[in-house]
Amino acid sequence: MSDSAYDVIVIGGGPGGYVCAIRAAQLGLKTACIEKRGALGGTCLNVGCIPSKALLHASELYAEAHGGLENLGIKLGKVGLDLAAMLGHKDKVVGDLTKGIEFLFRKNKVDYIKGTATLAGDGTVAVAGGKDKSELKAKAIVLATGSDHVDLPGVAIDEKRIVSSTGALSLAEVPKHLVVIGGGYIGLELGSVWMRLGAKVTVVEFLDRIVPGMDGEIGKTFQRVLKKQGMTFRLGTKVTGAKASKSGIAVSVAPAAGEAGGKAETLEADAVLVAIGRRPYTDGLGLDKAGVKVDGGGRIEVDQKFQTNVSGIYAIGDVIAGPMLAHKAEDEGVALAEILAGQSGHVNYETVPGIVYTWPEVAAVGKTEEQLKEADIAYKVGKFPFSANSRARVAAHTEGFVKILADAASDRILGAHIIGPDAGTLIHEVVVAMEFGGSAEDLARSFHGHPTLNEAVKEAAFAVDGRAIHN
Image (cartoon, rainbow, N blue to C red; front, side, top):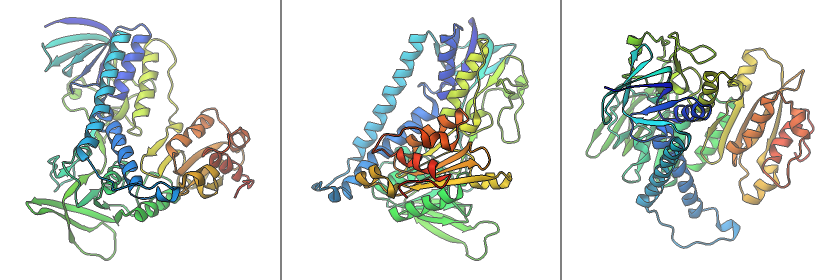
C-alpha cells in the first residue's frame, strides 16, 4: 500500500477527465488521472467519436468514388473495397491520438495511473488492477467515468452480430442487411457507414420521427435525404426481441404503444445494431458507500461548481445532467480545473452544439421551433437553401438549408439549425455569435468571404428580417 497526496485526482481518462487533468496541472495543481481501459481518450477516442468519424470519412469517399464524380468530369475504373485496410486506418488514427494524450500528460506532469478506482472515503481513492494496489489521497476527487450503451430487453449483445456502437466499428464483413435499433445520432451515423459500403439498412425507431431532440423541420428533411440515399425507416415501431441462428438474425417488431394498425412481424437481418441511447457509467465507483447522491436516471447530482453532496468530490461529463457530448465534457473539465485553482470557471449550456456526421451533416445549437412555441416565446425565422449558394453549387452538394431563429423583439439569436455540407463546421460561427449575445443582424452584417458555404449562414441571418439577397 502506498499513500500519495495530490491536489486533484481525476477518475476517468476520457475527454472530460484528461482535459480536466491537463488544465489542473497547467494551473499548478499536483494531478493524477486514473484510467482502467489501459488507453486514454475514453469511449470517444477509443470506440466512439474518433473511430466512427474515420469510418464515416472513408465510406463517404468510397461512395463518392462509386458515383457522383462523373458529373464533375472524373472517370474511375472499377472501385473496390478493402475493409481490413479501412478498419486498419481507423485503428491507427485511434492509436496515434491515444499516444498523443499520453505525451500531453508527460508534458504537463500529470501522473497517469492505470487501474480501477473506487472511492474509499476521506479523500482517498483505492486503485486496483494496475501493477500494485494502492491508495491515493487528494484534496479534490473528480468523477469523469463517462457513459455506456443502454441494453434493450430481449436483444442480447454479443458484439459480433448483435452489436452496440463498439461492435459496429469492427464488423468482420459488410452485412447484407443491417437492422439499426434507434433513430438517433449514433444509429444514423453507423448505419450510414455500412449502407455506403453496400449494406441494406433498416432503422427501427420507437418514436414517430428520427433525431427526436432536433428541430422538427430539420428532422423531416434529414429523414427524406437519408431515404433518398437508400436507408429504410420503420417509425412508431418497437423491437421485442432478436434471435440469432446460423442463417441470420430474426428481429421481432411490433407497433409502438399508441400506434394504430399494424401487426407484429419479423425482420431478417445479418447484423443488428442496438443504438437506443447511453447511460451514465458509475459501476464500481462505490458511490453508495461514499454517500454520493444520484438522480432517478443514475446521473450524479452536482451544484453549479460541479461539486457533489460530498465535500471534495466533483463530477463532470456524461455522469452528470446535460447532453452526453465530448465537447460538453471538455468544457466542464476546463471550468472545474479553473474553479479548483481558485478561478471562475463557467460553462454556457445554451450554446452547446450538436452534430450528426452523416452526409449531408446536421448541426444545431440553441432552441428549436418546438421549444420556443412551448415556452411561448415570440420569434422570427430566417432560412436559406444551399441550392442557392454558389460554393455548394460548385461542389454539387446542394441538399439542405440553414435556419436561424431570433427573438422577435430583440433580434437576439435563440437557435440555429443546419442540414447540408459541412454543417458541423458552419454551426460554430453561430455558436460564437450566441456566446456574445449576438443578433441575427450582427451575423448578417459580418463579412463572409465569397464564395463560401458560410454565406448561406449570412443569408439566413438576413432572411430573419426578410432581406435575403440570393433567394
